[in-house]
Image (cartoon, rainbow over all chains, first blue to last red; front, side, top):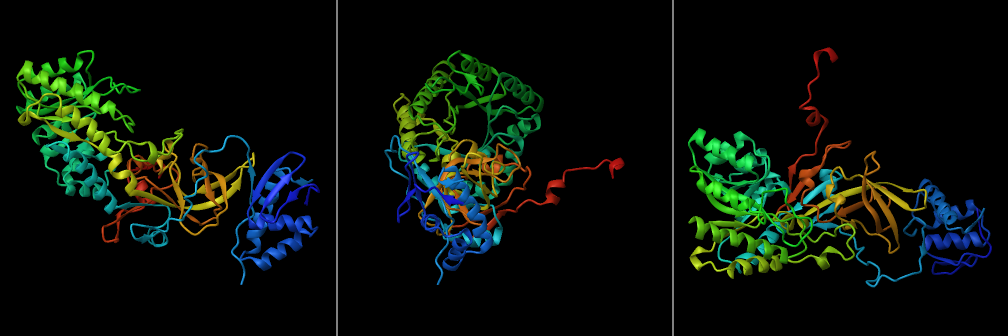
Length: 80
Length: 447
C-alpha cells in the first residue's frame, strides 16, 4: 500500500488531497503511520516501529492496520 | 516505557454550515454512579446491567412534590406502575407518599402486595377484567372508567355484589396539541363525557368522586395542561351546580417529559423541556383562578412516571466489536440493544464512555447484539475510539425500559439499586434459561 504522491500531510495530523480538495484530520498514530508511509518505509517496518513504541499486541495492530488501510482507501488517499 | 495506544483513525472535514453550538465536548468518562464504580458494578453483576439511584429517585419526587405543594393546597401523587413496576422502585415512591396508579390486574395486585391501601390505588386503563373490577370495588379503589361498556359492566357488577363503586371518568379533549388522545375515555367537546357523568349520577350504586385526563406523553407544551385543567374544572363545576354532585378530585394524569432528547429534535432535551415547576404553574393557576371557594377546591392528583424516574436509571454495557460498513462508516456492536433499551426507538440517548479515552473522536453507528437489522441504539453518535470490552453508560433509562424490555435472543439483565449510602442491592436477578422455560410444557409425544 502506497500513499498517493501528491498527498500533503502536516505534523499535527492534517491531511490534504489536492486532486479532490478533500481534507482530513487524523489522530497521533494515524499521522505517524502516514509520515512513515510517505518516507517509503515498508509495511513490516512500520508495524514493528509501532509495536516497539506503543502498548499494543501484534494481533490488535494487525486488525487496526487493515481497518486503517480501508479508511485511507475510502478516502481516496492510496495509490492502488 | 511504551506510549498509550489508540487505533489509527482519520476523519474527513466537511465544509458547509457550521454547527452554531460548536462541537460536543462532554466526552469525559463517567466512572461511577452514585458513588459506586462502574468497574465494580460490572464485576459484581455482569454486563449489561441496569442501575438505579435511590438518591436521585427521592430527589426527583421531592422536587416535583414541592413544585406542586407550594402552589396548591391539596396535592397527591400516584406512582405510575407501568413506567417502572419493580417492587423496590414502587416501594420508594410509596415511602415518599405516592399512591399507586395501575392499568392492569397484575399491576393492581402488585400495588396491594407493596402494601398500598385499596383506597389509595387508582385503577386506569381500557381493559380491566371483571375479577379485578370486583376486587377494586370491594377495596374502595378509584376506578377510572374508560368507555360506556365498562360503565355498564360496573353498574351490573355493583348490582350483583350489592356494593357501591367509587368511580371517575377519563375525559379526552382538544388541548391544542397533536395528536389528540381521543382513544381513551369520553370526549368533552361532543358531550360524551357529560352523558357518562349523568349516567353515573343516576346509577344508584356508583359514586362519582373524580374527573381524570391524560392528554399525552412527553408533552412539551405547558399551555395544553392549562387547557385540560380548565375543561376539567368546567365539568366539575357543572357537576356541582347542575347535578349537586361536588367533585372530590381532579386527576391531571402524567405525560411530563424527562430531559431525554427526542429523535429528530434539533436541540437537546435539557435545553428545551419545560420544568415540572412550569407545568405546576400552568395547572394550579388554572384551578385556583377558576372560581372554586377555598373549601371546595378539589384534590389535585398527578400520575407522573417518566419525569420522576428516567434520570435515575442507567444502563451499563460493553463493546462487543468494531466494524466498518460498506460506505466506510464506523459501526460498533454493543452487548445491549433494543431488546432491553426500548426507549432507543424514541430518544437519542446520551451515552458516555466509562474509562479514560483519547481526545480524538469518530462518528459511529451503535448496534445492539441482536441478529436483527432493526437493532440500532444510535444511528450516529460521536464517541472517543472504543475497543472491545470497553464500557459505556447510557443515561436516563429509568422509565419504561424495565417494563417494556423483551426477552428476545438475549435474556434480560440484572437490575441494581444503589441506596442512599452508596450500597448496592440486586433488585432483579438476571434471567436464566431455567426461568425462560419455566412456563413451557412439552407434549408427551415430543419427549
